[in-house]
Structures are given as structure tokens and as C-alpha cells.
Amino acid sequence: MKVSIAKTSGFCMGVRRAVDMVLDAANTHDQPIQTFGPLIHNPQVLALLAEKNITAIDAIPRQGDGIMLIRAHGVPPDTLAALEAAGYTVVDATCPRVIKVQTIIQQHARQGYAVIIVGDSDHPEVIGLQGYAGGNGHVIQDMNALSRLPVFDKAIIVAQTTQSTALFDEITQWAEINRPEYKVFNTICPSTRNRQAETERLARSVDAMIVVGGYNSGNTQRLAQICQDTGKPVQHVETSADLSTTGLTNARHIGITAGASTPNWIIKKIYRELEAAYYKSKGAPLRGFFRLQRLLMLTNIYLAIGAGCLSWGATNMRHAHLFLPHTLIAVLYIFSMHTLNRLTGIEEDHYNDPYRAAFYENNMFLLAVLAIVAGGAGLLVAFALGVFPFLLLLGMSALGLSYNLYLVPTSADRFKIKRIKDIPGSKTLLISAAWGVTVAAFPAAAAGTFDVAAVFTAVWCAGLVFVRSAFFDIMDMQGDRIAGKETIPILLGADRAMRLLIYILAVLFFVLPIAAFLGIIDTVGYMMMIVPAYDYLLLRLYKQDALYSGATLEFLLESQFYLAGIIAVIWALL
Image 1 (spheres, rainbow, N blue to C red):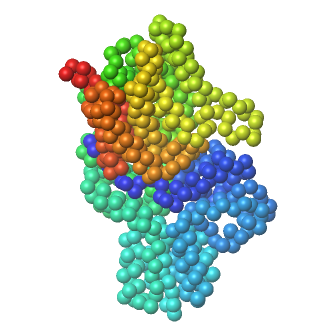
Image 2 (cartoon, rainbow, N blue to C red; image 1 turned 90 degrees about the vertical axis):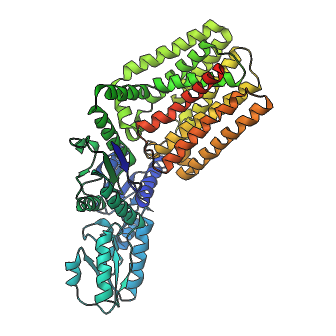
Image 3 (cartoon, helix red, strand yellow; image 1 turned 90 degrees about the horizontal axis):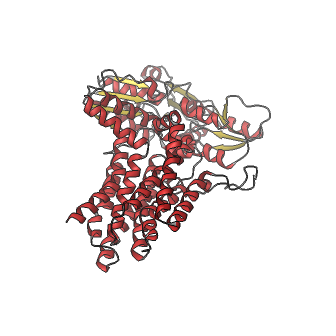
């Protein structure tokens, strides 16, 4: 079964901007924060905002305080003035596309034009647009309503930004024939046009469609209608709990599209449900493989063994012989630290990977015991190698555990950064450094052979892990922002972060033959060029939407470390 997700699915620019603005306000201000009306038409997003004490009001009080955020739909100008007069600090998150429509209406209304708005009369955006028409606005929802309007001396026709493109095209054609003196402005957002066009194309190419979004969301309802018009089976679901997989597992190709207010984690959960349902419907071998793969990924066992494989590769690159205790220490340390960090990072996993969050909540005690036992076992192995390896690993473990600990009292309000975790971008940098030390620097130092080759391989391995961790951060940006985490992609933006990763991979690729030629590392470095090339291929496929951020992509990305180990084994045999 193939599952295709529309590129335009999920938050549009305006919604993403509004959500980012309210979350940034929540993370940087101590004042109470409210929104005038629900921020977006998605109950799940509104629920998580409520958890952050961000509430919505529908009526303007006589006296108010704190921050009042104007939602993406916008409000009438008199409402904006009333909010400021009430004492609120107003933050205007009106979508720039909506502001453009407001400006067109206001300019022409002042010149005496009648304003015809194609949209839903009770939609908050349309209510806001009406406020700029100066009492001369007329809302129509279909051709019949248009034909009932009086003939105006001069008028403009605009559209609600999320309106049906098919309806507006029909109205435009009617105006050209019957009211050529009217000015027509196609104010439907390009994102809406692209989303509707892509949804129709996708629906015609698949066996069934899943439309994800709030039941009260007008733009999501229009997407569902577009799919129904193609004659394909359609499910409009708000969350994965509403999804019925009956009959879908036999479909060869399923399409997923989502409304402009649908967050990525809900789309991801729908995708995972379909993925799991497909394998469950198959024979025992395939079903068993999927469950094993999922278990290994969730428990970090697959990742930890990958650390051992990368350690093999680093050992070969620095002209050293394989020493199994060092590899075992790498496996145990990475398993312990990653598992403990997952246990303390469940909040963001609720949004980034709900399945993983549920798995860790349901198995918290067992996973905590396994992580502690693995960390202790690693220390015992290091102690057997000598006092210095033991102290070195003990220090590394202490640093890893201190990541989530409060180093400054929580009552010290003047200190924004109270934990290492609170330092922007610290997670990716520290994970990368820990891997570089564990798989390359520690074995060399423990063996008393710490040299230029050890430094090179440690930095090179850290670079691979940085790309891997930052890539996951790019896919998890929405959940991390909601949880208040400032990852590198959030600081730089997704596009800049992706370019940074490509530059790093280019450096990791070209530095290997140079180091091998100069004799800094073994000639196996020539073959190791395959690993950054493999990572680059995954990034390109992801950017082209050939791979979605499901279990398959995660499995392929973690497999890069196994690739390094396989190359080392092949080189040793040859």
C-alpha cells in the first residue's frame, strides 16, 4: 500500500504565523495572553493552547489587561480600536493575505464602491472584512445570492481567502458577461488555490482519500467536497480516533490531505495508523517484522546497536584494531542516555510522535530500569578496563544526566536559563558531541592512543549525528515550538536549517578523501564517503516528498550508522 500526502497539507502560512506568534508570546511574556475568538478552527490546537493558559474571549470587557492576540482571520477595525481602548496590548496576527483584502476593500469603500464579498457570512474572516466596507458590504455564498443583488453603479468583487476557487471562477465569468464595469479581485490565497488543486489531482490518482481537519473548518469541508466530487471514497476525520481503516488496507494507493489549521502531528498520526493497519492485515512474517522494527526503534535498541557499528567504523578509520569492550560501552551508553532523555521529553513527543509518547508513558518504569542498568553495566565494563576509562565514562554520564537537571533554582525568576536543556539549540549540539566522544574519542583515550586521527574521527562522527538529530528536529518543529523548545531549526528556520545540513554533509563527504590521502585516517575513509552521500540522498528524497516522516524514514536514517559498520567489516575482510 502506498500512502501519498499532499505537499500543501497542514498549517498554511497565515495559521503557522499566528500559532508561532502566540507561542512566542507565551514563552517570552509573563502577562496573561488571550486571543479574540478561537485562534484557528482546530480543537486539538485550541486544547493545547488552553493547557498553556492561553484562552479566547468573544466579547470585549470594559477593562482588560495583558496581551490580546488578533487571530489570523482578522477583526473589524472598530473591534481592534475597542480592544486597545480596553487596555490590552494588542498583537495583530492577522494573515498578510487577509490584510491585503482588507486594504482593497477599505480603499474602494472610501471611493463609494459597493463591496461584494464571496464567502460564508458567519465566518470570522468575512465578519472582519465587512467591517472595512463601511456599511456597504454584501456577502454572497453562491450564484443565486449574486443574482439577487441590486445593480450597483460601481462595485468590487473580492473573495474570502479560503473560498472555493471553482465558485469564484464561475462568479468571475458571470461578472465579465453581465457586469463588466465591476472590478474583480481574485483574493483567494495562493495556498488555498494550490491546496484545492493538488487535492483534486491527488484524489483522481488514488483509490481513497483521507481529509484531516476540524469538522467546523470551512476550508477543510471544501477539500472533502472536492474529493467527493471525484467519486472516490472519502473520510473526513478530525483525529486518528475518527479514522476507520476497514476497507482501506486493501487499497493500493491512499491519499491524505489536510486543512490549513491541521497540525503536522495529527497528520503524522493518521499516516502511522494507516501504516500499522496495513502491516497488521498482512501475514505473520510481515506483521512480525513491522512490530519488531517498531519495538527496536521505540526502545532505542536499534539506535544503540547503530552506535556500536559507528564505533567500528571510527576504529577502522583511525588505524586501530577492533576492541569489543569499547563497542559495548558505546552501545550501553547511547541506549542509557537516549532512553533517559526520551523519558524526560514526553511533553514534546505528545505532539511530535504520539505513539512514542504513549509507549514511554505505558512502559516508563521498565524503560527507566533498563536505562539505569545499561548505564551501570557500561561503567562496570569501563572499570574493568582501568580507573581512567571508568572516570572518563563516569564524567560523560554525569554530563548526560545533568542535561535535564535544574542547575539554577526554579524560584530564580531573573534567570531564564536554569538547565542546560534551556540553552537554545543545546540538544542537537550536545547529542552530537556525546556521540563523537563515545564512539571515537573515548576508545582512543581509554587505549592511550589519543591522536589526530581520534580527533578527526570524533568530529566526523559528531557531524553525522548532528545532521541526523537536526533533521529530526526539522520534522518535529511544530511540536518542539509548542513545548517551548528552541531547537536549531526553530532558531534558523526550516529552509536555512536544511541548507546547513546539506553544507555539513558536503564537508563530511569531501574531507574524507583529503584526510585519507594525507594519511590522517586509514584508506577506508574513501569508502566511508558513502555514508554522507546516503544521508544527502535521504534529505533530497524528503524535500521532494518522496519520503514522509514515518517509521520507514526514521529506520532508513538510523541505518546510516549500520552502513558505517558494514563498510568497516567489508574493508577489514578485503
